[in-house]
Image: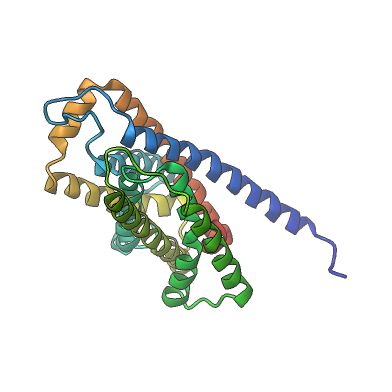
Length: 275
């Protein structure tokens, strides 16, 4: 018979449940607001005649902007400095992949429904395990690979019952939606494994990781906004649609809390359990 569970086991179970509830509350709210931002028709403007929020990149920027303020404030309070154990450039690979994955989530909602996006996310387990094998030389039992394949097959079964998006040709919807979702899961798989690598190399805390990643991410998103010349259209749209401002504020808050729970879960239990 297996030994009875110890107090340490119960503490681990309680911690995992805390992480689970925090992640679900943050990211379910975030996901619903993502869909609302990217699909709700609001007041049209001269630069945005269709009335649909014009920039997925700005949504990523607003999330990173609040996250870096929260992380800097907590790091200053706890450690007296925002300097992290790892050099800031070391966060850039996962900041870039994290920015791409967030952009992919927002952009995908123009082509697929939110429930299908959520189902597709479950297929992320396999890329996470493969990234762990190649980036961090991790070995997983075959039973875990089998579980990951079964989850993915389940997702594929539900994905067969897809709906057409109004105003989009079916082929276009499928191609761009699939492309965005694939970009999301592959980028996110790399992100979690690189964060795990930073944790093990430099022993960073949750808030130090949050600050380091968002420092690089906010530079990337600002550069993308400028390069795509999206700032005038976004500014005009937000001035004419105050509700869009509040929608972005809510996504920024839930994104920040979600990041805290993700970094803590990866640090405590590893990227596969987090996924």
